[in-house]
Structure formats: structure tokens, C-alpha cells
Image 1: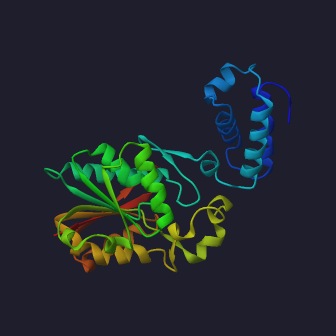
Image 2: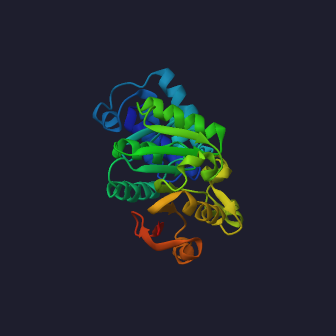
Length: 288
């Protein structure tokens, strides 16, 4: 490891990460050094002559080793930004993706069209990114979140505490909508979910950051990748109020087909929305 200032240290680290197949190696090196030193990425360059202590260099070397082994950056730093939130993440939960921000945007818009205190349910909450975003951005809404994994639920509840949203979301453990009390049947205004949608046959070809580190249960649905979508589509009409919405994220090759199938599950309207990259990503269904 070079003994020069931070620019030289970052350049050396970026080359090391690139040699080990890490995408965007310089950005990764900057973020890891920022994490070790407590300085922002801007400060690393603005105060490039400020020495990096032996303790910080040792920690940086260890984190570089982990990243070169393709452990996700977000698990190493323990943080992931999502819309207006800074979330704690680890191997118990899927790392929130930018595509899911589009799902939240659609849910926020939908909730704003309901009067009073609309009821929203986030199915398969994981880190809590969707439910906590809805609670923060739609303070009039009543938000509930379900999760089958006890470990993931611990992370979601921890994020609620860290964000001061403990009382804003009710977390319930269980499979999809089975986690909810019967008295909510026919009363929910918006059900939103980012379910698993990777096909079993595609799992071996995923990047090692995903395949070897993120929870498989949050990724793989089954042979078609839409098994969880179909289960939720089968349950949702019983729980939605008249005019209520089901919003789901899916693969770009999946959501058009899901929209075409909506009528067979009792939905009267279905449409598809693109993600930030213009790819079909969100399917929105309305109960009559």
C-alpha cells in the first residue's frame, strides 16, 4: 500500500479492485476510504495531504480485501441510501435497488389519491425500505409491513428505530398477506411489494455480489420467476377495498404478462410503468 496522500492511495486501491473484477472500482475505493476515515469523498481530495493513520490504513486494507472477494459494498459499510432514507443493511436483507424507488413513487402517488388515512401494506418488507419510505412521505397513511424472515424483520425494525419511525409502521411476521389480521380483509387501499422474481435457472449466472451474499429467499421465486407474484395476485382481491391497488415490481420481461393476466385474478384495470432506465418494471392492478 503506497505511503503517498489519499489520491495515490485511492488510485492504488482502484487498480487492485479492478484487477479483481469489481465494477466502478474507483468509486468503491473512495467510498471505502471515506468509511474508514470518516471524511466525505470531497474531503478526501480537498485535504489530500492529511495523513491516513496506520489504524485507518489497516482497516482500509481489510475492507478492500472483502470487496475484492466480491462482498457487496453496502454490506461492508452497513449502509444504503434509498430515496430520502439512510438504511442499515446486512446479509439478512436484500440491498434496496434504484428500481424499487420507482415502485415507491407509484405507491406514494396512489396513496395521495385516497382521502383520510389510507391503509397501505408492504408485502415482503426486507430492510423496510418501502414501508418506511411510505411512512415518511405519506404521514397521513396507516402503514403495515409483512415479512416471512424473522432475521429480515429484525433489520426492518432496527431501521424504524434509527429513523424515528417506530410508531409509524406495524411490522408483522408471516407469509405474504397471511400475516395480517382478518379484520383488514376488504379494507386495504394499497398493497405494494417487491417480491422475488429471479428464475431458478438464472440464479447461477448472477454476479457473485448477489449470488454469494444476498439472501436467496429474497431473490429466487421459482422456475418462472413469477410464482410469488401469482400467489399475491390470488390473495390481494380478498384484502383490497373496492378501488384498491396492487403494485408489484417485476422483471422487464415479466410485468407485461402479469398485466395481461390481471383480469383472471379479479382485477378490472392493469397497467405497466417503466423504471428510471425506461424499462417496464412496475405492474399496477386495481380491484373493481
